[in-house]
Image (cartoon, rainbow, N blue to C red; front, side):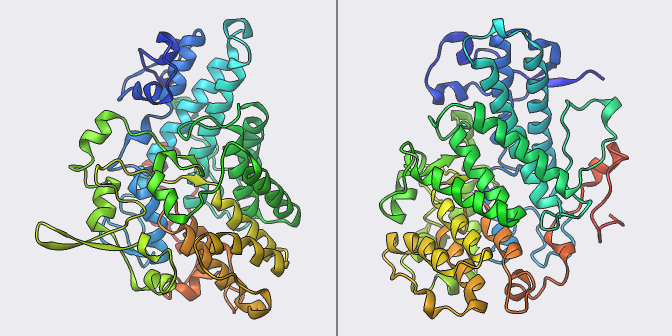
Amino acid sequence: MKRTVIYSLGLCALFGITSCDSYLDKLPPHSLVEDNAITDAASAEAALIGIYVPFKAMNPGPFGAAYISDGSHMVGFTSGIFRGFDRDLEENTVNTGDAWDECSQIINAANAVIKKTGELPDTKFAGNRKAEIIAEARFMRFFGQYYIFRYYGQFWDITSPYGALMRREPARVSTNNYPRATVEESYNLLLEDLDFVIATSPSFSTVYRPSNLLAKAYKAELLLMRGTASDLNTAIQLADEVLNDPLRKREVTYGDIFKNGYKSSELLFTRYMDAQMLANVFSNVGSIVRMFGGEFKPTALLEGILNGDSRAPFYKRVDMVNGKETVRVPKLFKEDGNCLPYYMRTSQMDLIKAEAYVHLKQKENAVAALNVLRLRAGEEGLKANDIADEELHTVLFEEITRELALENGYEWFASLRLKGKDGKALIYSIKPQVKSVKQFIWPIPQKEKELNKAIIQNPGYEGI
């Protein structure tokens, strides 16, 4: 079987379109061609845009409502049925394979662009464009593999053999049998991609495309997850670089983030909704407007953490729709259906700094980072002396929840990194149904196991 890449015709590279919106309007719906289609700069640009095709999927697909809901469901912050998800985290076998499939499409398309563009002579490209195309493809490869690493890999244990499937070449029948990397290897390869993007990509220009600033933000988050002392200090440094960049700034108020949406001054990355997607959002049961416009509802656990905080109204509003009370999530719901996922925004850097300081046992600095966002929200600042050391992780988790819940799954991974009073992962205290680390991640999908005989299943799911 010949290798394939996603390819589109009529792209802005071919027709001189300069608007990013128009550029991404040209996303190809499904067409595939052989990888020898990348023969010059124009076809490399076309294949690059093809990497974004999985972003168009709403149901199934991990990059819309599911990008938000999976983490919130797992930690226990939302109720409502979707994807057949098991909130007790016992047998997460239903519909988690679509996330793997969509990420694999991104990874495979990115690998093809990286390989075939890299083989072309530099003289076929203007200026630094060849390197920039490869950098954008490498970021998108990172984005897909980072998702798989977090949801399917034991990212919390650097000694674990259960890392991500880190393919670096386009998949083909002869290379289907490909072993997963160790956790340490996964971190190293993810960081290699981000470092290349930071060194090569242009400055921030649009929320729809990667930039060196976006790569710095994700590197800060990734280093926080790995968590060595050196990692934590570097994460703080990178977070400050993102926060101090003149091209992106925190919004003045918390509400301005969601009021301004795609035009928010602190939004770093989201997906572009083209006309076809917008035409289908109200009929698609997996769209954000459907899921957070009546299907998913905040649980008592989430409402308890939000109680009395000025950010609480952005998580729940009860509207009368056709004579029926309907719960909506105002930070996500938009009447016109053009609801965006917040893959990354600058205020996450304040939370990354706070957590890094917590792990470094610098409580004063951690509280100062949290107070930046509390004061913006109109809340009183916390006082380090009022917080017992054994309560600090819980206080941090609650602040993460108030600021960032129901956006990109961040709250779930924070609940695994942070500790309860007993020294165990905080999720054990938050959700009594969690009994073991098996429940931290999903099983490798059956389809991948059938095609890839070299992959090993996650512990506890061997019989699946």
